[in-house]
Image (tube, rainbow, N blue to C red; front, side, top):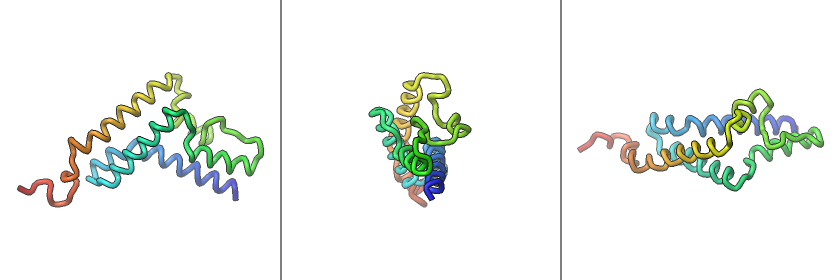
Length: 131
């Protein structure tokens, strides 16, 4: 059961990372304020975790369940199997982490500023072109 829980958390974590990458463009395309808000709050959480140098709770949860199955198991800060980990964990790309943190911060600024340059009225059905 612990292995199944760890695998479920791994999948959720992977899907969350994908959402963090493409959630903003999807929210704009589908004109969905709730999606845009969830995405922005997720980015805020990511930036917070990066700044305070904490691991994601999904990482810790998966590692906990994997250790229940195999005591002594540790990813040493990683949450996915090696083949997916290389895609997700940017520290393995060889560039300094601060570059990715700055890029995430810029992406967050674009998402937050979108509430001004694409106001809520833009997303309200039937009101975008009314006079």
